Length: 189
Image 1 (cartoon, helix red, strand yellow):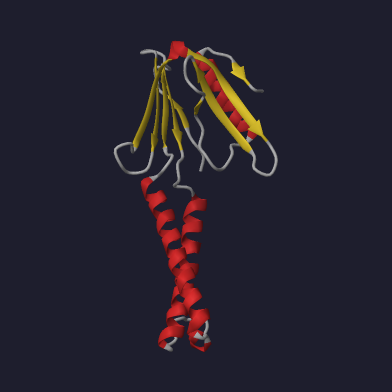
Image 2 (cartoon, rainbow, N blue to C red; image 1 turned 60 degrees about the vertical axis):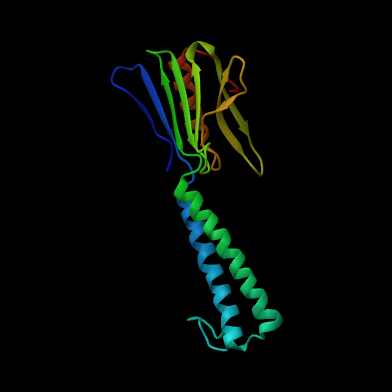
């Protein structure tokens, strides 16, 4: 799943959707953590009640103190982590859109945050304040490939998703398309 870019029929509005935490990898890890933690908790409970609650193995052979107790605590900690992961997916943290309107001269950056009074994160800017579109490429163990909007009087505004880096081709294409649309230089390539 990648962020999509659409240009309206009048060619005056460029909208980029930004994928948040509703990625396949997040669904995978939330499920794996939930199942693993459930297994640990059931193993701990099986050792306490001396009744097998697991389908795969017999956990009644475990001594409750310390083995069953520790497995139960790992299970509880894992379930709390799984709950957090599922809530992050439910809230779609980091998801949103970038809207560039050359007709009105406005730029709107929108992202979803954690619930509360600041759940909606909105940044507004004028197109005339944009100095450039900056590409950041950092390779290595923790690669980072991102697009930033450089505007007068502001820090660089991130435009791409967090987590999985974009491919170089996709990054270059999106950066060039945006720089051409805003009529500003593309930096960093």
